[in-house]
Length: 226
Image (cartoon, rainbow, N blue to C red; front, side, top):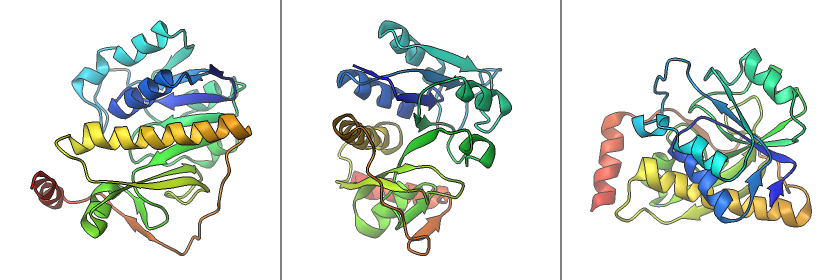
């Protein structure tokens, strides 16, 4: 089924591809997809060379999903804002460049951006939070939120904890997989109710984490291997 009120704003990477595959498997086709792509085929954080080979676009073509390509990876650029203004969709599944923060110019155009965050909120805000939650709790968390101007402080739609990965790459396989799992659950909710049920976060609760040092990330991966 076509999700008339829901589009997607994405860069081609493992997360976006996983989202799209799971949406298609569950017969939830985004109404429209806006693709952010560097003009010089440069890799953005979280991308691999295979992400630039066109598989994401090919899936859109094979499933008759309309799309446009914007030659920038700046989520707040005027080109992205103008493309969004032309669309009728109210919600956009956000799968943009890692670490980007949406500014007033894009947040004030009447669209809402659904983000699937790799950490249970409000306890684990910020970057590489899947690693921090593994260290602190020996489990992975995922939260679905509507983005606002701050870092992971928007209204929460759902949160869920997941077990540690077993014999699977954390960054490029397991992280996208559990995020996509929660995405499908909240889309199920939207289809049944016609809206997302949200709960506002306490702005004082929780912590904001920053990119974990590579050595600490290596320690986490070694722990997972054991």
